[in-house]
Length: 332
Ligand SMILES: Cc1cc2nc3c(=O)[nH]c(=O)nc-3n(C[C@H](O)[C@H](O)[C@H](O)COP(=O)(O)OP(=O)(O)OC[C@H]3O[C@@H](n4cnc5c(N)ncnc54)[C@H](O)[C@@H]3O)c2cc1C
Image 1 (cartoon, rainbow, N blue to C red):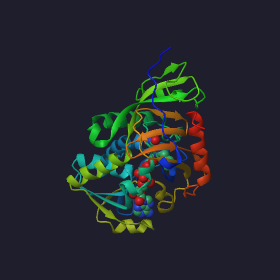
Image 2: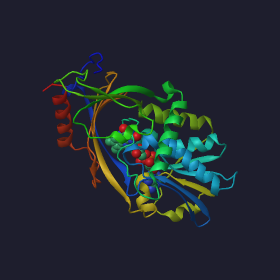
Image 3: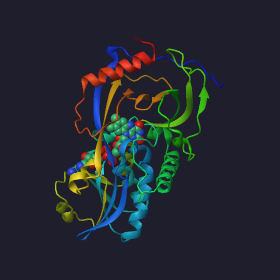
Image 4: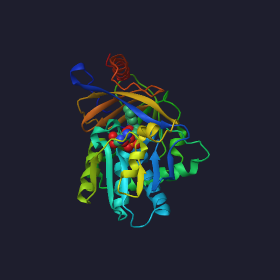
């Protein structure tokens, strides 16, 4: 039996609540769309459908999209990236590092996007991977590439940190998370070293990404590399013909549903309660009921509501989330 020190309980009092936020995860039947297509005179590479783990996969899908692009685009072709969430920004970074001239076009960028809502824990959940075209092996390669690329970054500048995760015994089974080596295997504990009613469970170390810092640093590095982000909203794919770049990478996430008529995209709503930041040094993970100590907010999750497009923060669900975490820590 392994046991470690007792951690501090969070302060979950009403006065510490900052805001309630809601966002729609860009899920896709069949999983990621990473493929090339000819659209009139343009070569188009799709990179979307990251569901509940877009921060986790972003660096890996950026590499996969750049590899794909190199197979079907002239070496000196200028590149347009559509979208400036985590997927667009990491793809722009990868292509810029490979010497490409890149311009990003997006309605919103960085911390204005859905990507800024994410915790974010490096965990490949909330995504479909079983489609034969996607293949489990390709998914695991992307995951491995992503972890490797994250490890190469300046951890402090990009807001990347290793934190212990504690899962109560009744948490959803997720043994597959530990099979490909990107997350070290868990250790079973008879007693979790966290405040609240005594409970057994397990612990593992995981990579945690302070999303705002991550997105802001990506944008800073892209600006230094001469990558411009232009504010632009697309309503019809014919508009893409007018872009000056011959090669386009589509990182529009849910925006791809109407623009590229991809009905496989579907929503999974998440609601989070942001409390004042608290440097607790650990994560609680119990499926979508999680607690992440982000530097700008203590993030309390949550939910994964498949099929729900409504993204206004729901007070009743937020109350349930708060009540759950207060019970968990014996605070109510
Ligand atoms: C509550 C919640 C918690 C999450 N937690 C985690 C986590 O812990 N770990 C993790 O890895 N992932 C997590 N995720 C998932 C992650 O946030 C997403 O998978 C990821 O942000 C998707 O990134 P993206 O760049 O594809 O999409 P987005 O961030 O949505 O970016 C899309 C971009 O396209 C632009 N765009 C769209 N349509 C148009 C248009 N028509 N014209 C012009 N621009 C357009 C947008 O403005 C934006 O720039 C979470 C998600 C939610 C909602």
